[in-house]
Length: 149
Image (cartoon, rainbow, N blue to C red; front, side, top):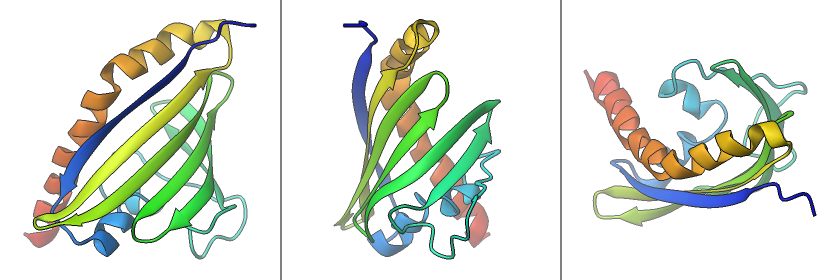
C-alpha cells in the first residue's frame, strides 16, 4: 500500500437561475463566463461539451488538467474525471436542483494524490475546498450582475 492520500469534500451554493441555465455554467465552455483564465481546449470536435466521453484540457494557474465527461443528465447532473498530471486524479460531480430562488448546486470532489510531492497540496485542497467552492457563488453572481448591466 502506497499511503497516498485520498480526500472527499464538497459544498453547496445557490445560483439565481433555473436549473437549465445554471447547468450551462458548469460545463467546459460555460465556465469561461465566470472563471478567470478558464479556456478549455478540445482535442476532438465537441459541438456538445456535455456528452459523456468528451475530453478537454485546461491550464489555469500553470496547472495543466485533462478532463473527461463521464456522466451527464442535463440539467441536473454532470460528472467529470480530471487528471492534473503528475499530481492528482479526481472525480468532480455537479448536481443541480430547482429551489424557489433558482438552483441549488452541489459540487463534490473525490481526489487522490498520485505521487508523494502532491500529498500536502491535496490535503490543503481538501482543507479549503468547501470555502473555495463556496466562493464560486460570488463569482457567478458577479458575472450575472455584469451580464444584466
